[in-house]
Image: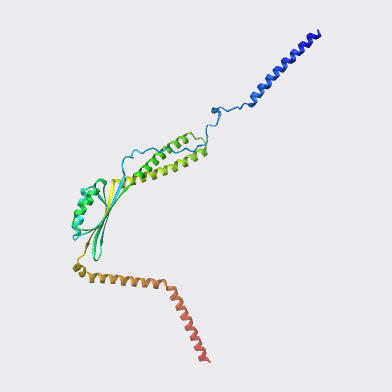
Length: 285
């Protein structure tokens, strides 16, 4: 009987130790594991991450050359009015216009300063026809600038900024905190200003490319006889104007110095009164 009882106790102890060992192994296994929060339980409003700019791509205008053409010419003619009428007809013929027109009438020369804008494809024709006119060409300078790279760069940056703006607007629709909304709106405002600047630059480049500019000076010398006839009269008028200007300037100076006159008059009055008292005192003695 004692033997059966000893065997039963030993068997019970063995089973208990095995269960305890398995429990320790499972405890160690769960103790070393990490618990991750499901994505659905995380905050749905993260701070807006910085968005990298889109990759620069090739512009659709890469194959089109953008050339700005400018020219300066100075021509001396004998008949200024007829030469001006001829230039007017050429500008009209080549669908151009005057961006600026001024007349300078000096004593020895009369000249027109003209800034002509003409379509790019008519620029060379206009210059050639102006050269064919009567007169002496004193100076001529033609300049052609290739702005294709600048045009592509500005256009590509503009497309990137628009894509950038679109992605920030998407973030703005998802934002739920005041801080996130304010930050995104500030960034959107900054990008919109950059877009406006790029659009204005592209517009300017397109205008300069589509219309070339010719700055033309047409001058004519005045006949010496006519100049001598009006010489005395013009000098007389100039002298009168200068004299009147000097007189007005003198009056202005007098007006500005009126405090000094008052002080001088006060000093003279005090000195004379002192002398008078001194003389009366001497007479009494």
